Length: 468
Image 1 (cartoon, rainbow, N blue to C red):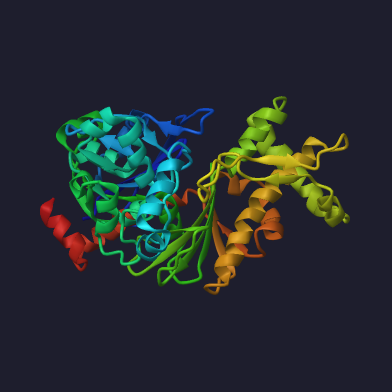
Image 2: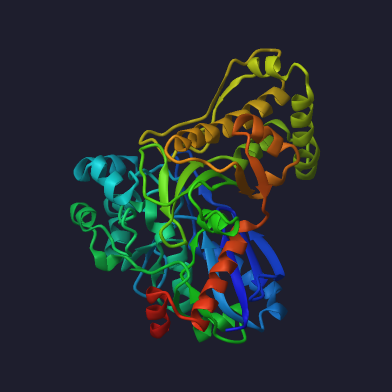
């Protein structure tokens, strides 16, 4: 295949779309925004139609660039747990990773299955939001109407690929931390013990295929709706952070990558599965590799909150382009920076909860006085966020040697001065900034698929191609 690749990067609040050549040259691109729904009870979800509408609008803008598209490759926020009807309709809003409604169900299934078993077989403990197992159990108990009608429980890519092709699938990188997948073995199988004890039938879960495997071709109706002049092959796609790691060349043990967007994620590539209660493990899009994942739910979102709450006098361009860089630059250049840091308020960085606690966690500031300025509070938030990731990297570094070079991507990573602040508080790595990496990672899946078509070698992909 020699056609173009349509890459879709479906983030928490931003969709990025790019058209890439087979050589991964970006030929065109655009983006759209949408707003997750968050309430005072800690719920975080979004109507799946918002994803589709954003894709449709973006494709309309890029219509003249879609003529040679032969492959569609999605990168997605995970899980975006979606209950899907037999006709492909979403039955309820998709539950996002920082949702806090299912802690009770997570605790109960931990007790039934056993935490040691979860860590040994699935490499992850169920938690609210981040583990779709807990979300499925919540739907069964609190939305029996949805449970009864659901033909399938899938993730963001399951829903979108189904909307494109009429077929349902999920890949290891997105389902690794559900508590349902055999993450340690990574053999494209669900865990039968967990399914049995949780009462979830395997027939209600999507087919497991590799991220770069084709699921089907775009249907005629979807092609017409998106303005695609032909019916390209649609790949299953993968988790956005995993694909960011792929695009950053994070494929060898000890490679480090950080994503700094709405949430912040620190990740380390490993060549054998390890597990702990205080971080996640995802399967890589590369064979025989896994990635540790440590997620701060409100990374860039904490800066957005600070802007809205304490800097309403500054427009967005001034805040991110002048104010934040200026505060950081002046602090790092201060000969008395250590003494000033010691006087900063303490910040507990759980503004959007924690993925690693069954209890609902909240953020806090302490040590405030009449002398505390908003600059001090901003520095406290930045330090708290960056140090939180640094603590995890030091923990993982005791299990596997870390490389000194760290790939970093995401909108917040490009704010001037913040890489220098990371060296102070996250770790003295050689940070390499890679913009739009999840989008490029999706395009790389398309390139990998195209190479498999030219020289088939992956049995799972070959089988999927025959089905298409």
